[in-house]
Length: 108
Image (cartoon, rainbow, N blue to C red):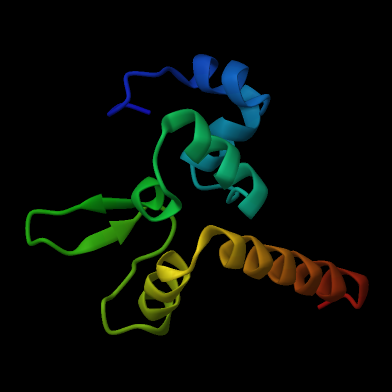
């Protein structure tokens, strides 16, 4: 938001996400769902990887919510995801949502 010169209130208005929800994300009390990340990325005109990452002085990228080590499975997953065609990324998102819902139904 700072890089794009947009306030929390403006982001809330443009995304339809409540300011308190955005505040919780910023304070790292909760994390946004995939569908909310897409909305935020559309408004900020950036991709998810860039949204969740910031460049540190050593050239490694660290995420606002998790540390993304280049040798980790998370990094490989993100790299693979971002190399997919948009239609395939949407299929992956749908599959992940279905798994999340399945896990919630079973109390996982």
